[in-house]
Image 1 (spheres, rainbow, N blue to C red):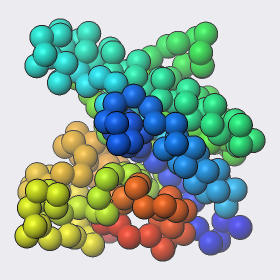
Image 2 (image 1 turned 45 degrees about the horizontal axis):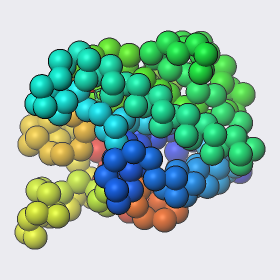
Image 3 (image 1 turned 90 degrees about the horizontal axis):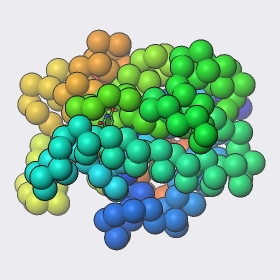
Image 4 (image 1 turned 45 degrees about the vertical axis):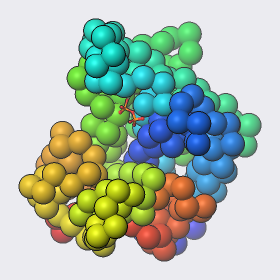
Length: 240
Ligand code: UDP
């Protein structure tokens, strides 16, 4: 069935913010269930899917620092938040009989295996949905950069960035009614104009490894399958 897919092997980045739903913090289980349904469907179409989950629904180190918490401690808390989110997806996917493997860059051996590229390759080859937790495992990074890193390591066809809007705009469309939406951009356009796609480290890594970044609204029902099959609304950041 893979011939129906525009992208066969993808890295999907889901922000913690999306998981929080309307409450803005913690995990809204209804969101997890909806996304797990979509990921299950995408996996059954034959796509190889790796997922990097953010932790911003719990803690972001940079924001915690402004509140007086040491940056390193805040980053560690943020990385642990990504583990909680990944557990939520592991449970929801397992309940749907979707074979999956959770690997964390921050060792948490009583919970899941530690990330190694070999373990990830084996799981991908077996057709498992991969859940990458712990970001890069290092402070001062974000899960966007973790997603670009895993996309490069796993040689993914595309990095799918699920956001709250349907692509990249010249300004924040929620604040500026004159903001215009782009269908296509180059990585350099994004970096030179400081467009809000992912942080610069993530975009640079994607550019260096020639990985297109597909920015789409995860709030749109059915978006993951639509993007995978080339029918979704998105901005594509590519140099080719
Ligand atoms: N984090 C980190 N190193 C990483 C990834 C994440 O220290 O490689 C910490 C950092 O504090 C970050 C937080 O975990 O703010 C949550 O990740 P992120 O902000 O990327 O989550 P998202 O915005 O996607 O929900």
